[in-house]
Figure 1 (tube, rainbow, N blue to C red):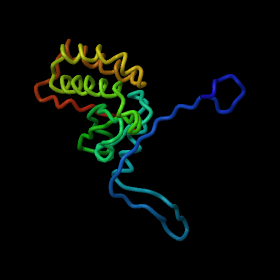
Figure 2 (figure 1 turned 45 degrees about the vertical axis):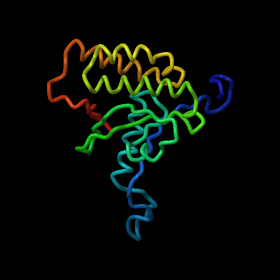
Figure 3 (figure 1 turned 90 degrees about the vertical axis):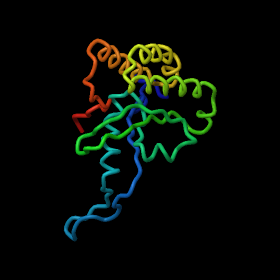
Figure 4 (figure 1 turned 135 degrees about the vertical axis):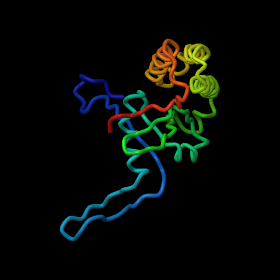
Length: 178
């Protein structure tokens, strides 16, 4: 890390990354007058939306569900179910926290167990249990850089506890911007 103000450029840089996998078209696209090497397709569009959503969740790397399923040996946790602009289908999204070594730690195992239980309670509309589990994971989640995600779920849970969603609630977050 480079500290801001020490004269180094560009200082501490924090970016969000959206990753996804799936069939797409890669190569030179266009005409003789205007040719561009590009990548197009639904998986590419979703990766772009995930990059934007990384700021909302406060995580450095968001993964689409298809890619997350291929990274079973990595430290990956579910984040939400999202419907992004341009898609009708909701997409489970995940955060990438580290490689195989991180996944093998007892700290990650404890976080994953508690986080997955909180996630299940949240989508099962068990607000009391979800709130308790969210409070329980806060120190572990903060250690892994997930403080903003914990606060986001704290706000959602307390909002739904005070004013429950309709009976047909599917738990999907509607991302309204690109």
